[in-house]
Image (cartoon, rainbow, N blue to C red; front, side, top):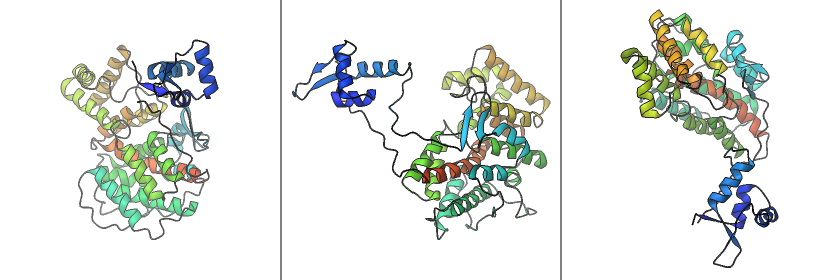
Length: 382
């Protein structure tokens, strides 16, 4: 016999009242079993899961315990993310990252984007250096518990500047007021600094937010218990660091490197053998193509050599010929950093820096909601 659920757990999993559950039994939709303890009925877990799936049109989803209403970002299948009603793909061509941060925060883009003095980082790995900088930013803020919007956005600017600063050594001729994209491009070691800055700026804009992504949910949950912004950003960064989220572009980068060495066919076949899917392809939201990829590709195209441009096209055509889902932003970030001869983890670095802007907007929005509203319930199965 399958694992069994009590009447209460079965009803909770289905999102119905006990009377409705028993009505399912009387109509023959569900079969109940006698509880040996004599305290009611039991139901087979597989039967409940099957009914839950059918009742949601075949989608295996849990009962929703909190509805998140947001005015920060809306996702559209054909346009991608809209920040406060404006398409990110269009903003990438007309606004700087700092301006977009101001749009998301509903505040003036002007502010202090200077680098805080955190000392010398003893770590080498880029992600570890960013974690170090984030922790130090919070530890050196004497009023980190100040949750007023002006304090939260100030903390965000401070964190963004610090994360960029630890990516690499600062150029000797750098001006303190340089744009974030220019600082980041020079630290990542782009081969064409002026083109690098424009491309990095567009990438930062495109990756600034993506509605309720997993890392954003982590930040909102932290905000719901009134964690300070530094702790909330830490929760987001920990989630983003996963290979299936912020780290996905590095796998796409490695696919391109392998294709350059061994040929597109061998590289794609190897990726499918090892991972069962192609990194940088497919998206759960954009079934007809990720609009962010198209914009990123337009910037990457001018930075790639003719040989690499042709190879990227071959990779995409081979994937399309075998009905692989369309490219996503991870392939766009990979192509951009590959074309600029930047490190393999550049995509994740851009993602982390950019997403602080979106997390900040969601953090402040969540502060206006009822505290502790996120409380999931499990379905206990003996």
